[in-house]
Length: 221
Image (cartoon, rainbow, N blue to C red; front, side):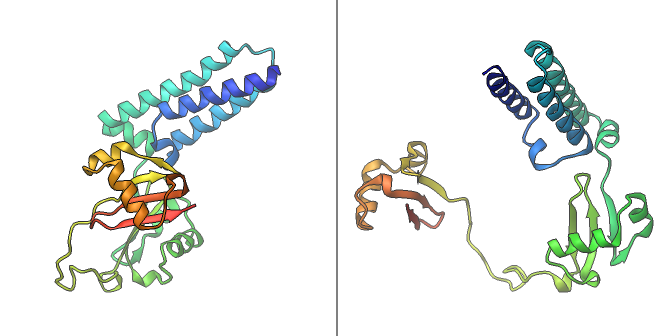
């Protein structure tokens, strides 16, 4: 039981710590993010398994790391030198269609790595690439040559209307009253629309969203 409650407590504390460090921790692991995440994970396991370590003493190093990460992130926002020192800088691997071998060697980045990440971007011919930039997170950003880019309405001189985000009015059988107020609608209107679609019980609805053109997207359970 002691290990059970220690596990729950450490789980909650680490979750709070990761949330305090921001969403960037999940979406983009820079070198310092990776180091902090690994150290916090190791500390968590150690505190759970070793009962001789008090919970308070065990949590101090975890939140010290969280504090250091928040401080470094703040300083990185304010100082370009610190940001480059901590996170590094992007590297141009392909420039004007030519592979930059020195940059590849500097980053210990092989042609196999390059081809793999290009395929992940649906690009199978290196000759189709104008620029390729290796970001500090390890992600490859690719700019295809103009002749190889997807055709857009702008290329054809076509005017397009505004496209915003759909607003979810019902999710998993629950009404989102805030969203209803946002679009100046009410539960009565919602009930009427559902009855038009032969639905009498809102709990049967998995999701109901109103799109920017006024159309309703409905999916039942």
